[in-house]
Length: 291
Ligand code: G3P
Ligand code: CA
Image (cartoon, rainbow, N blue to C red):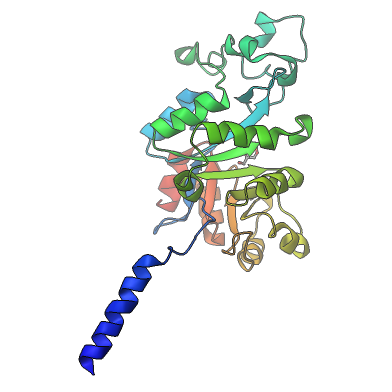
């Protein structure tokens, strides 16, 4: 009897080895054992110019693997990493191209943008930092062994930017099973943009930026895995309402809140049970929540 049971168990074990592993598709910044994940907003942007390679390198040196960025599109179709839809605040474009106010990204070519200084506005030691293309950016995130919370910024200005983004990511190797499973989340304030990403690549983890009414959350859960609200209006009850639902990949809908820059605010949202905290000051948040 024992022998039969043992051989049946052995057979079952062998069969299990032949079966495909269960697919766990939705990923994202998982809370660590000691607290929520800490995500460096636009890189370590309190200490280096936002959305530059210097900002993600610094986040890496500070020990942070998740970085957030903002993706937009140039006049000639290149994807670049910049927050505002104008280049004026974070580059020297006004001096370099004085006649081209209001200096919108969509009105400049990639070659023109590549000549701009995106570091001096922040501090002299960053002079010469460039606006990275998305390709350059993901290559650096890769080199640093980091993970990317990619925001499609103002998608209404750039029809089809979802497809462009996926193309760049695919060519850079960022849609491999490993990347999609462990290292990439795509988010946007535009629900249609998040939906488009989900429809074109249902395996990718997505996030919706904002705080939809609780009654509307089930609709969002059909195409997203995260609800990422501003911390200023966040409550424990709202966080719990999100957590009660399953997202597009059948796992608990997550909450990553932004932009939390003080220890007091970090402790407050940690008490709500958020999964991740997006911050310009990852060091302050880490100290406050013990990640
Ligand atoms: O990732 C959250 C946050 O980046 C959204 O706001 O304006 O900083 O892109 P914003
Ligand atoms: Ca952003």
